[in-house]
Length: 352
Image 1 (cartoon, rainbow, N blue to C red):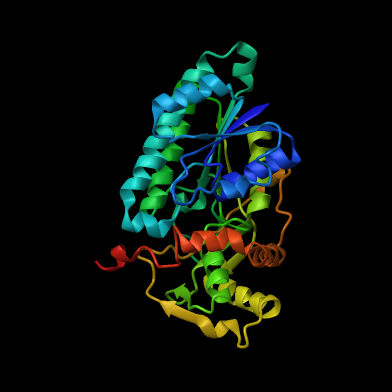
Image 2 (tube, rainbow, N blue to C red):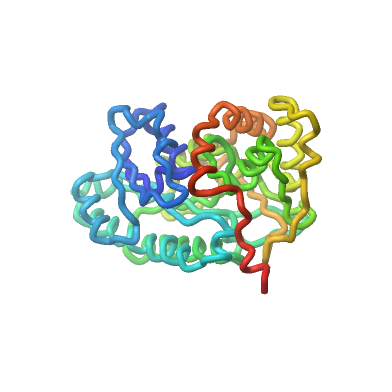
């Protein structure tokens, strides 16, 4: 089997590739445009393995996609390429519409054209797996969980663009018969996470003795999913999921943002003591515009139908994550010195 992974130099995509190539021996073509968050160092552990190849391309380029499908002849697409940071979408929504909506459309059309010409047996086996987010569902109150039938109610430019891509994938299945599965995941964390997200930003700022910014009161709740657990879930759905179905993937690890930051501080006190408690660096800052209150996933469907459950608790996953950043300074120091220095994003929306 050969799998075309879009966005394979990103955080989740690279975890998928390390799993497929490094552990399962699956052939992978990594398609990535190498934008600010794309980093081939994330797949360095498997880049020299047989069956791995990289193609630099943009999913908005239909002609390039057609050439890649023709040349590589994949049996499956795992579509992870996306603009993914909410704060960046507030400052510049156009890139999110172009990549997440138009790019997904171009990829669907290239996949459909390729799939429609495959021999019957390969056509029957082909899969298009679209990877999305829990943010398409909007915000939960104090109780309840997102299920696969929860109505869409996206509240940020990012989540609106992902909701749009989800609808396109659904339509291409129902209209054209393209064999698709879709997954919506909760917040990921783990090794190789780009430093602008909450957990890596807190770790790195803490190591550097900088302020640890927490939006609002820090009481917003997220369900945290270790990225390597997510990668296994994605492969499970891609190979076993029912066509046309949606599967929610979460870590069953709800935490307030402030509790996450405090847990990181405590781990840093233990693993990289600085002479004073890291909690003293916590600073509450102006909240994100339209900040959703709570996300939480019901994973009953993927657990009962496909037998997947997360292996890591939040505590074990977070400890592994902090230890990884401590052991891999060259990886994140290169990013901090070049493409992202830890500045806050999304302030344009707050100026209104």
